[in-house]
Image (tube, rainbow, N blue to C red; front, side, top):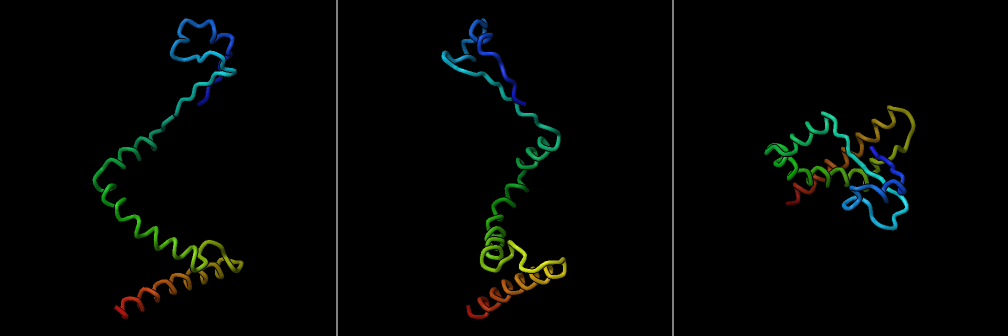
Length: 106
């Protein structure tokens, strides 16, 4: 929520010392509204389970980046749900095949 105040009233306010800056043309006050879902998520992010999983996230993000930028998983090349499913399956198949070949060569 953002509240807007009249600067003329702020100039003569007895509490302006920590609030109003001399020469300001406008005065606003912002307040973040946090719902239950946000506070629940914040509590979850403090758990050891979340911290452990967050450390492994880079592996998944690297694979998603490979799919998106090198194998065209970001945009559909054909129309229709079947065409998009086929494109997704082929992209994932190509990435898995690359991984298999890399493991065989090691």
